[in-house]
Length: 261
Length: 270
Image (cartoon, rainbow over all chains, first blue to last red; front, side, top):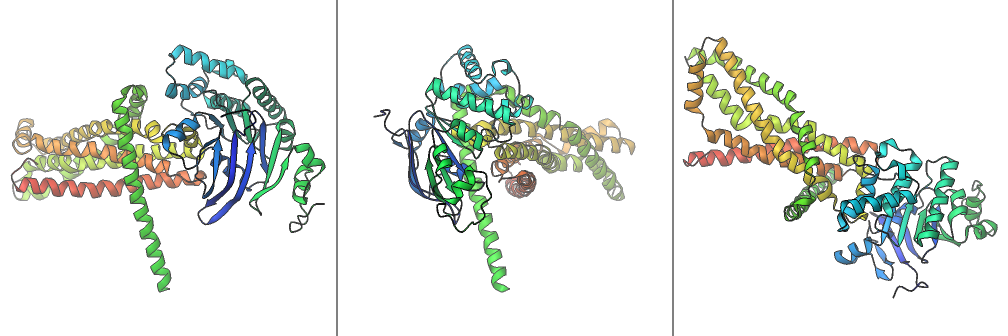
């Protein structure tokens, strides 16, 4: 059923609304198993919202989300919880629990879902922390870590139950270029070594070029996907003015004319 | 103008009904979560409950003590004069004890708990919501109510009677001090107290205090979970937690008092 050529995520005609306001309109795309897939676009275009629909926090007004060929949106609670175990999420702020040490944060999903002994769980948490280079910070509280370390710890927690897919929301937001590059390198290493599929929401060009196997670009005006492909292709052959402005870091002079240059 | 007023009243009414619905849903979720914890008590973090109890109850002793002492002093010193006119000033002890046991100790303590602890829970959980920690729990398949609310409510359930007994003791002690100052002996005051007050008066206050403990901590947590985006939303949540708690405390106390008065009129306990 889960052959490698089948998409691991399939979003079909997804429409997202906040009350009466449509944020995303009939979006469809697929994510291949093992790839690093980037959702990009300007601020307020619905990138993080799309991710929240993909991870099941919100139910779409219309359309469906499939994870590993199983319907994730609007499914029964048992299936929903089973599919949740296949995904890990790193939120923009890290969303680590401030009253717990880094090790306890990483161990938390194991405490809930495994029958491992405490020493086995601690060893597994230490392994996850070593994967992101935080093996020496296990006993620290989140408040004692730098911004980059918090993101790494959040990735370690996302990997806690060995998920097939990891979602990262703005991983390089608020980080200096060196820390950001280091985090990108970690993500690539995890992808190659663990075979995990990464879905990353970002608008940082440097990270997009470094990480993305494929990407889609969202637009706030059309509320849909305006470009998809490899970042270098989109940069060199932008299909419209907005994509060109984004990849070439140019101001969009004519916001009405979005025809290809 | 009239249509604006009508629509405003309609919107406000709908908002109140929605809020009541949310409170009922939350109560259901809390009951389910408590049931799960009762089935699997090992899920409870006793250390965390003790920590919350310490912050809510032990750290709250000074303010509860101060307010109760002052209340006992004020009621006693203000009522001793008028009652002396009728030669009934010895009954001040009875008056203060009855008020403190049945009404004031549980209500004052609950309001103080709402201000200190309920608001703190709302701010803490609200900040977690803003920081996406609640979303993180959901995507880990963990129920935020079980993970964040149950332990706080259990701590509140025990903190309230603890503080209420302390408040009763200090309120009555203050009244004793005033009456001793007015020339009455300790044994006379003790006899007056035991002649007129009985254990059911204390039990009535304690029963309320258990209920108020769950109410105040539950409302604080609910308002935290309902926090919207932004730092200002956390402030709004803490305000809503305190205001909702006070309204619910007063409303439920009226119901308690009505029930106990009716029972007493029929010659039943209370």
